[in-house]
Image (cartoon, rainbow, N blue to C red; front, side):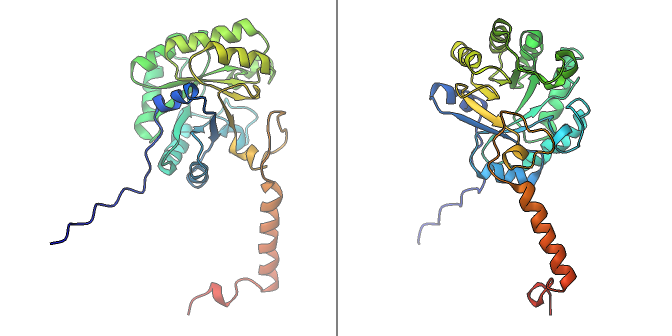
Length: 274
């Protein structure tokens, strides 16, 4: 009797884990991270082979049309993270903790971060802060919740920082990154930090630094998907590079559809049923 064929492997790939993500730094492998807010685009991002997908509170501006990140709620983040989590086969998925979900005490921060992990297929949370959030980071990590820190420009503190400004206080930035590392963060985002300062921070901390407007010396880079695709509305930050021009392509496609419907060219026979 012939041997039975081996069972088919699951189509789902092995997910990148937090330790693997952190180990990319020791392996000198640059890390790529992209935001995503829904199932179809998250699936395309994952298929492109990035190491990390961020469900960012930037959705407040990019998807919802607000002027800053403050209005987005925990329930809204969870709603979008659940969609993204189902789409991802390989990348590590990190979810932003929105303001003020981690400012209400350590126990409340654990409760809110726990809700994110329980209701989605995501593996880690991100919060803004370094030395000032070290106790919260440590509490979350002690509860088994991986944390990515975020130093430099902090969009949730836009009013306190006086707008979206480059952060140049090297001692404060290095202190924040070191405090986050010592508290147990597995990586740290550096936003709008001069390249030379970001380089020194990257050399002085053991965890990966993920830059956004922080120069090429960081261990990885993150951009908002809509910026990559050329879909940015209004102001385009200096650190953005568009790799496509969908802001032009999408209206053109819709205009062609409109014209074909008006002329009777669409739908044609092959688009119908008999």
